[in-house]
Image (tube, rainbow, N blue to C red):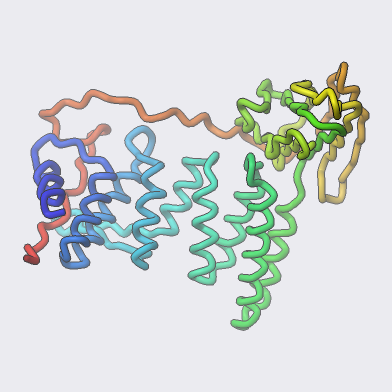
Length: 339
């Protein structure tokens, strides 16, 4: 790892080098492996966090999650980064997670890691916001498991708060969890026999949740895709836009020896809330007709942004500044050679 450390330090100190968060993350790991002083590890992680946090296309949202992991694994939750010239900048894990939740709204990790942080710091506000974030979307393949785990962890934290003499905070946390649980729209397709029916949902603003694209930017998601003996498909839109949702049943395959002869679509609006309404529709699997359901009083106010992947950019090698014109913090100070 001495070669890795030397290569990274050499590149980062070179005029015109384009600095990215992963370089400082790897440098921190190299410092630690090479038995450098802890402050060098912290400095490298702090610089990585600053680079990852930059606005717009200059930032690296994915690296926000990576540096949080690296910091938390070392029980580092606050770093004062030396920017040179007598200037410093404070980096906090909590703020990195909040930024990640904002910039990666389709990802569960900011909320899951916030659950962890809330437990470690006995923070009911962070726990409540993490649960609300997880409950606001459907998570294909893991939805019910994650909702159940988040609720249990929140209730466990509430018990710890009561034991610490913080009963009002505990009750407020439980209230927020219960308020977050209802979903604007829930649909469940079931069938008899042995085979496969697919559920596709056309949402009011033009997107469709289906097998190939189970999550939409408008909040809906197919969270369970059944087949064979698991004769069930589930669509949820915990926070949805008002309008007409059209449910289409698509026959895929039916076992001739145990054919699908009947199917049922159950649609619940405001599921789990005071205005809950349940509609049950018999579906002819041989010739299924679309089912339209109107949602009123949906709680979504904006679509999730479409997240484009990073693309290659051309940088002037003579310009020492990063894109956007702001110089990067200098590399971590050289570590003493422990050999």
